[in-house]
Amino acid sequence: MSLEIRKFDIAGPLLITAKRFGDARGFFAETYSARTFGAAGIDAVFVQDNLSRSAEAGTIRGLHFQTPPHAQVKLLRAPHGRFLDVIVDIRKGSPWYGKHIAVELSAENFSQLLVPIGFAHGLCTLEPDTEAAYKVTDFYAPECDSGISWNDPALAIAWPEFAGAQVSAKDALLPGFAELDSPFVYQP
Picture: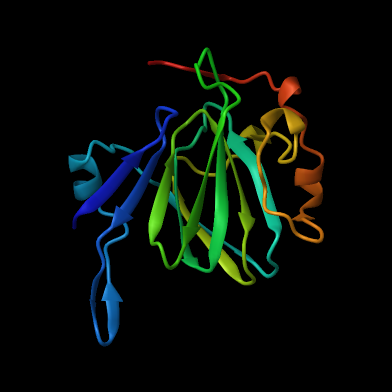
């Protein structure tokens, strides 16, 4: 398996695209191999796979993270449909603290986003019946579940415009970025 790996201006996150092998029947691809990822310097050990499906375009999930001792690295992709994936650096002392990265993940572009510990994560579906699949390095721990408001003006995230964003009741109550006392510290 060959990987194309792209770094961002913010240190840590990676955009990973695996090679597809296709013929008249379709294609085959390894979306994850511990050996191949390890050879590329990605040493995350994933313990749980998650899948969300959103019926409507404009569904927003996030911005979420888990606090220590159950913080998670995430590896996201779109097996069906497409979404705008957004991550915000919440590592105290980071030169990019409060800055974000936004990338489109889709079944067509076949890219994956590696989200390191210390980032809040959210997404907005860009078409109906979109799926987000992601691996995580720690199990879901409700006592460590946290987040920040997806639409906080301080973050200046350019979310796609829809007639009405579909947001869960829980996400609608998340605090603003200014209220965050981040448990994460930037380590260069």
